[in-house]
Length: 438
Image (cartoon, rainbow, N blue to C red; front, top):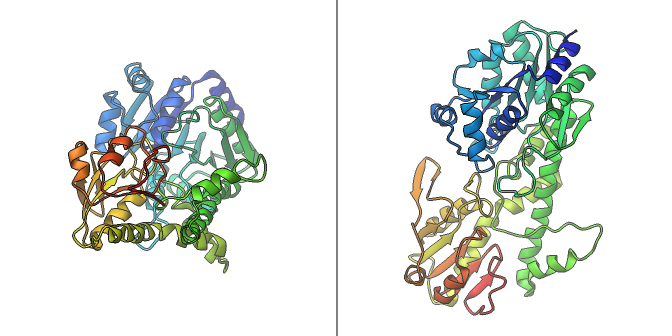
């Protein structure tokens, strides 16, 4: 009866949706659920996020400001810090962060605390879906026991539980939450069918069903580990190409002319974002439980993790050619976002680059047209409000660590003493006398 009841409620759009965590994953999902005609409640422990949502003020780049305000005004979307409203929902998605701790170990405390809060108010006939990226087994080994113990309900009989990995690419102009294909794996065939049906009622992208939450969890880690390994390969070859006097950027551009069997990945100062730098650690951590070492993955992580130090070492050699020591050198870092044209600096390698530069006694400033200030290891750092020819000329080295499109690189080239371009963003500038590329 639970399956038929939920399918009918989905068809009739009488489902009330809950989304826990109103960040880069949760808020766009909540907006799409509400736009599809489902009354939606957003849950978050941060009062400021709840206040902004309830006032119709957007703070996520992938959400259209007018969409959020319209949904709030129509009372289709509300936000709260009070988890007792979980009792009013039929579907709840957990979209909280899964970072690494200080020892590079998985930190699933946000997932655990959110699940505990949900369990206190979970009612019969509810679908619960974890979207946060995590290690294979989390849904069944961690989430399920907490929900059953806290609610007194039984998974599969009283509520459905599944995993559907988030696929969010901030700044992507083509693929958003609405049109990105979704993977769903749940505990039991009925749960998989109903949860997949719920997503199909909201999203335009395909919904692909797999046999279990563990498969869906592993699939998500495969997506990002694939990229981690290939970026690690390119970064390692970049170091070799520099010694050989070959441009790795030109090598990749030549290789990608092959119409099959090759996908282009490019070098950079390291990995950033909420997934690629983190997910392989979740897998290698889980693998050790079974006495298995993911040697290829761990090797790629080592290469990518050392790129900030490698870039600073290259920067030091550039300064040396201008008879400048790193100690006391004035360095301007351009871009602290982890990718171009976004205001997201989570795990950005530029922050590590700045840290290492300062450790080597350089005098460092940064400019990012998207990020006026950032927080790193408990401290807040302010960026330059603008860059002018006079400002650029006052630095011994300009180090480009994000390929933002709204920066005047011609002006920088004409006025900088020396430039280290780690993103090849200045590739079309003809005069290259003062430019070195990673």
